[in-house]
Length: 454
Ligand code: GLN
Image (cartoon, rainbow, N blue to C red):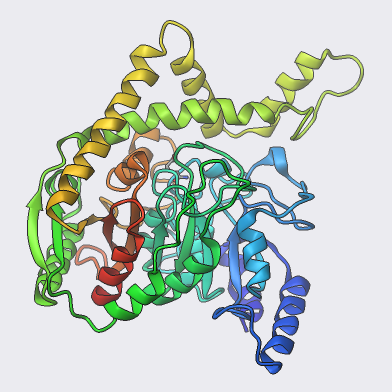
């Protein structure tokens, strides 16, 4: 049914870069046998999934939305991919994304944008617009994204779906093509909080192949989602972050947020206003740290070890081949990030830029720690605006960067955060997301509150 739906709508939506009908059907048939034998591999065995094209898949192309990896077929599976296969989850295909996950609209994909199923003239958010759009268009019931600065939560918000950035280190990064290693985190996308929890438990857990993977039990997210479904939040303290709702937010987004807070109070939660003064500097710190790490990580696409190779005609030096190949293989936003990052890391500027940004990062983490002494979770709107129009921000990088104003603090601090649908905006009738943030390793709190609210 999902493959049929993909054939029906994906020429318009363009959520997928690659569809693996044969592989998905073979995996589904294999699961039928385990179910017949009464031994399904997991609670979601047989439930198909759309995988962001930034996770390696053995035998299936992995492009990261970039020309430089066009037609690359990895020889190995990412840990997330392996866990999905072992859990009997058929992989429908690979989803569209901003090139190397850099962007907030999926318009930076080298293979053309994805359209928002709610209004096809609008973006589905980014960088994981393909994954979230596939859910909103009913092409897949489950998807996987990655969130470096908001790329799971922001697309979830603007497509009316659920997206979770687990605690940093909660889901293995092995085989997740690196953008900014200290921020990147894979996580579940779904249409309901319980579905996301079931997927979360399949992909999470310690992995010796990722040195930043946390060696601790996976938080009991399914149990929490089931408890939350009762709708009782008595005894839960919820902090409203003053710095993340006000200037720069659309009136319809703020109205939806106020209604969400009122509903949480009705469910029995105690609502407290909380100030996190350094969150205001999150965006500036992120746009130094993320490009710095990107400039280092993307050095491997040098036409020798990885990536497109052009001008390899015996007439050009190795350096010329590398330079021409990177010129042809990367799009404008990736080049901008590499240049910004190389500059910020260069000797003489390191302390002024990267060093300062790391200090801000510590201050933001301290804001979270202080807030979580008073409350169990924090809430804010996920995004300042609803889905914007295709083309509206492509020539204005700063306007594009602003889409992640509210999501970036959780990445910088490494704690867990979720976006859950919060109705439609009075301004334009488009979906709005409520962001819930929890301390590191307390991902279960997101699911309890999210399931009670949805
Ligand atoms: N939009 C942000 C950026 O462009 C976040 C991307 C992400 O989370 N991968 O860097």
